[in-house]
Image: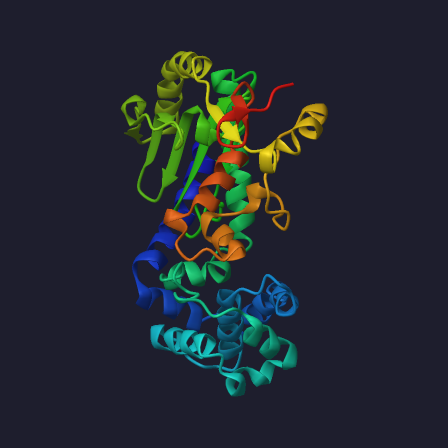
Length: 335
């Protein structure tokens, strides 16, 4: 497994340089070959179809325009990015007319908001991450992480466990220079609501130990330490396994939800053995980051939104949790 760790750390070091230095980032983009740029434009062709859809995203228009500027030989900089942002915010029809009426109409139909549509996209590194984290790096990283997980499962004898793997492009990890793996009992739906056997791989080090899921709010139980080799990691996780299982067995979460106004859908939900909430237009919740969820819902402040909090909690409920269905403000629905 050490070979796979070395592969991941090699890519992490390069990403960290791009993350920390805007000069290095723009040098990287401006020196891409014409064939690389054309390949990215083809890979990014889904953006053009998005221009006629309800899920139009200004950041994708920004990326789309940058790619075409690079193809034309324009040297881009942070000033270039800011200027295009302004053109998008001001809905500059003349500038974007070169891409056709469908794009211009989509831009014009995008609702004006109090805050900038780029409020969640302040870092150029994150904006351009789809141009950075491409194959073969993506495939090499994914394969290496899978092999590390297989090795840990065998070394730790992890029966009835599942693993949550997050590479440099994961929903909770977008545009970072580290990867991580969380192992937890299979009766827990999400790593966020479980005590985990945790491994984080970054440019200079690897960390391992017990980590309490984000929603548990029990930082005192975290035992992460720095290690130099995978052999040291395995010994640490072996010693942590019994504690993780004991803590998870004692963990039960309680939830309240409304089965429609005044419990109107309760009989249907009870018969089908399901719970459900609104937002029918959303797709697989596991594919959303907080930022993309905020964009699809039109939420301007993702850090202080009951909508996002409710949806992410609904997504992460676990087997064995207790769910209470309310009926109005003072009653519960009963079978």
